[in-house]
Amino acid sequence: MAERPARKTPQVHTGEVTWTERLTPGMHRVALGGEGLAAFSAGEYTDHYVKLLFPAPGVDYPEPFDLARIRAEFPREQWPATRTYSVREWDPRARELIIDFVVHGDRGLAGPWAAAARRGDVIRFAGPGGAYAPDPAADWHLLAGDESALPAIAAAMERMPAGAEVRAFVEIAGPQEEQKIHSPDGVGITWLHRGDRPVGKALLDVVRGLDSPAPDVQVFAHGEAGMVKELRRHLRLDRAVPRERLSISGYWRLGHNEDGWQASKPEWNAAVEAEQEAPAA
Image (cartoon, rainbow, N blue to C red; front, side, top):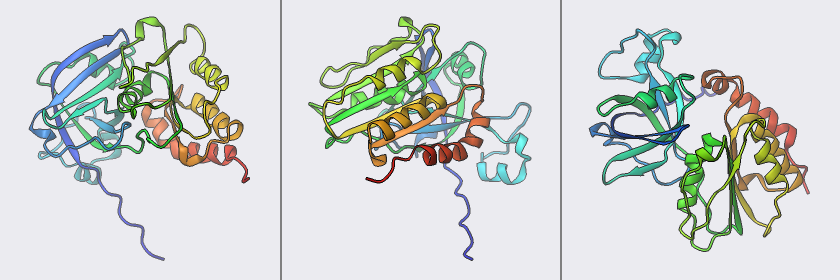
């Protein structure tokens, strides 16, 4: 049996905070720059993401920072914690990376870091990854998600081809979380205010009741895993959207931190796909 190739260690970049901005009560923007981004590149996809690396408390890592060495020489509990975030914008000429963070007070790891970030703070990250961008050949585009998917949905809206038919829905806590985001043709996002309803219910109700303006739809739907599961079932089984036309995945899961969710996500995704796969025509 051939040996499985060794897992490739992702390239690590170092970003320096250049400015921050509070966009809404629950969304904070951080701009990163500096020479540590010299090898970073993004732009092919609108759902590019990076994995931020947060040092384990009380642990000092050798310099130069080497993630492969850390994983080989340090016990797992001393590895940096990773948190995955979408690239909101990347300006290669200014060498500036913009990341938007959902902040829930002191809860979590990345949100409090972003809220407290100041000019000159340094953070390391790996990436980027990504796989989706609007296809000009699609008859129409459906974008759907919660706050966690908003940066990627906003990036997709801004890169929609001229004349594209777009339906974009983002579920947020309330009107205070709305942002001004438009596509080149002026098509905006429809904001769904969650209020005291369960996460995902408002979004699911709207998508299930949506009329399809044309046969060929390209879908980007991301957010809380339970909601995404129901969206995928509806799109694959009720609407028969081909799998290759779907970019759909859980960014997070209620009751789990990212470490727990990412560890269980591949198995969970495989189970959902097997359960919901549409029968062959």
